Amino acid sequence: MEKYFNTFSIAHLLTLSLIARIIVFYFYGDTALTNEWEKLIHNKEISGIFGFYVAESEFAAHPKLAEVGEKVLPSIYMPPLYYYFIYVIKFLSLNIFDLSNLVIIFQIFLSLVSILIFFKIVSNLTTKELSITISSIFAFYPINVLASSQISSITLQIFLLLNFFYFLTRILKKKSKSNIFFFSLFSGLLILTRGEFFLFFLLTIIYFFLFYIKNFKYFLFSIIITLIVITPYLYRNYVLFESFTLTKSFGYNLLKGNNPNFKVEGDAVYVEKEFPRNKLKIKTNNNYEINLDNFYKEKAIQNIQEDPMKYLRFYFIKVLSFLFMDLGSSYPNYYNFFHILPKIILSVTSLLGAVISLRKKGFIQYISLYYFANIFLFSIFFVLPRYSLILLPVQLLLSIDIFKYLFRKLMN
Image (cartoon, rainbow, N blue to C red; front, side, top):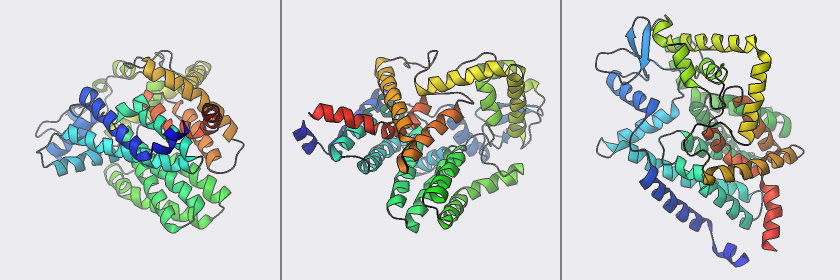
């Protein structure tokens, strides 16, 4: 066993990971842009506007592929970074190569770099041998292998998050401006990928720069760099919507996850069926998405106020589903043995590790706080399978102490 770990290197792991992702890409990869990404790219080319709602009348709009001459409404619902990612690849393709294939090829590359960065993070916390083992779990975790072959922002998000963690560990070793700059750069990019990440960014810099390192200059410098990254998009939104906001989806997400037809993963069908957009009399101007989201928010709050205990119970069901598994998932292959077994095992080890890590100071305590903050925040809305994937590196980091014990038993 020891001889195996002495000969098996990160280069071998990356090679095997590439082979696994190519195989999955060939058999299960997406063959075209889908859902909102297809609409955003198409509508931008047709109208020059970043948006997926198309006005059908003065008081009705529908998310669809616009035709020449149709009015596309500017969007504030979707964070823009993955759209930019696809659009840059489309520009580089010169319309010669298949766009979906190129996007997935780039995602596979990002996935491999993510494995390397994760290995570097884990190497700072444990031995090389155990780092290879934990990195192998991350690399070959079934849903992680599959994700890179799907048209989804999750692979990009994991890549950015691991860089965020990596430069945070670099800051703890060497408090240089360059490390803080790159940490803040990736913070800004993550906010442009998931708007709610701004809350986790604040949690991070308050914990480290105000309470742990206790350096207000670092705190201020990080805020400034991050704001520089997100300001162009904030300015765009202010010009179009007269609002300094990154995204406007709170109401829709709250209603999707808090309605009488309760599902852990939320129920978009309920929203569409109960509140058809063409009957809401919301004017199709630049503020259409903002006003629509405010309408959804009012309905969701009304649901909760009518029976707060019921929705509190729903909340704790979502928390438990996030921590362990959703007993009522409708997602294809969710209960597949190769998905559900590693998920349950990792859920138990990471929860135990998170509780243990709360008593420690520094990076690992922060990771535990980050883990619980994600679970308690997203459970307010709904819990999708991909949410577990974005927490995968966090869960593995929290499980290190337990893996150390098991690894020692295995080596002996």
